[in-house]
Amino acid sequence: MEFFENRPNRPFFGFVLLWRKLQRLRERVKTRRLLRALSDEQLKDLGLRRSEL
Image (cartoon, rainbow, N blue to C red; front, side, top):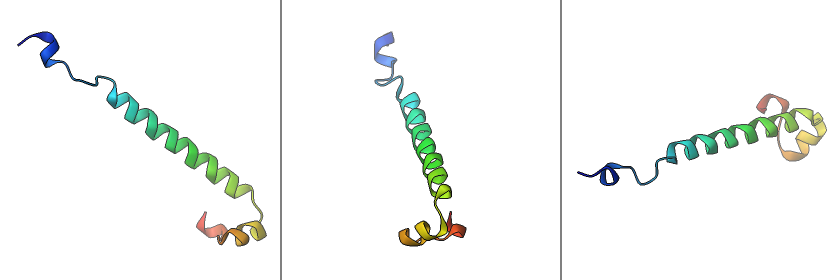
């Protein structure tokens, strides 16, 4: 078996998945910060309570 036959087709795919997971985590943190900055009345307009954050 030659080297190129045993090589994975997408060698950096694991890094891509990790990068995407980190991006989703960063977005969640950003969203939580924004929601915490809202007043109780603004949260009520969105249909949320402070305890749900």
